[in-house]
Image (cartoon, rainbow, N blue to C red; front, side, top):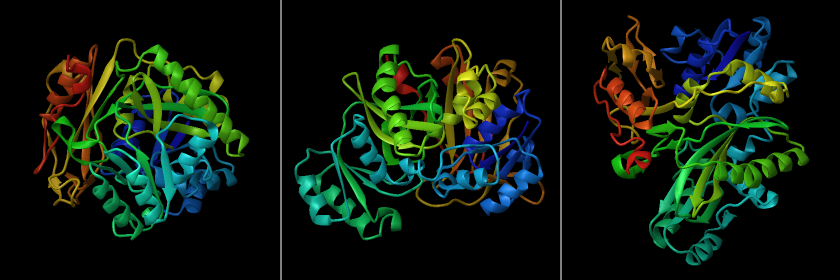
Length: 425
């Protein structure tokens, strides 16, 4: 089959990387892709979704996979379906789960899914009253899309109030902050769990743990993610069952009953408190950087799973993962990330002569472009992800960092403690 991947980051590169090795896939297109995706397929510079759908139809593309949240929230799936095309992702209505934190929290409440106590409001006075009823720290979230940066964990009531003021005034996140969610802080450990859904059936993928903070020891500002590992030993069969029974099943049932059956990836941000899972947030796409690790753990065909999910036949898909294999990803970021953009810098990757490293690692390129001479440049905040595989988390982590040592560009920075929670003992 021929596949179109919408997006330009490391997540989309990693999906393309998996599909490039898939015997079911003949050709891959990326819209728009990045400076390295053209090594896996063909980049297409069409921004208008209707025009992109026409292109997909003309080229006879069998499956379109949507990577980022923005096109989903904008309704790209609905547009492609109107053109009679097969596309993997939720409808515009269902994508509100990520597009609006207010919508998401109200769905959790309606469907009886465990989550933190909260209010949603556009009133500073109402927010202040609720803040005063909570213990510190306090969580403040902008309602709309903020590229993963619209959540503030305030250490004092005054800081929480200031965060609400900044959001409601439009100063912090513009229109995305016109409404806010204020909620109690849950003290536990965080997980990313992904369910591939076809509207009725679902498959739960191995749980991941992301590292949101910029610096070692979970210090510094929140980022889009500085690394992840999959699977995490912090999840056992009992916890998976609780997540399915208390979270996934009632959510899918509720969305279907509300006329927006969920097709695509349901990304569940979970906080585990004393062995009990609570939903922090829903996202409507693969996580980034979690996707970069998940994609190389599949033993079965990724293309077949995505196609059958998009066509309502997930129950017929074989979904199998590599036995006793872990993946660890380390994000290499640019000098000024996440504060401001950095000067473009040439990326140089040393030739990897070590067979063990060559066979058990790969680079997922993200914020990169090519200059007129074909040189690869670091031009984004998160530049690339070095992924290592291994029979243990430690081996996978060591390979990821070995690979990171082979990559050079001016201002390169990364966390040095990815997967520390799984290895601290």
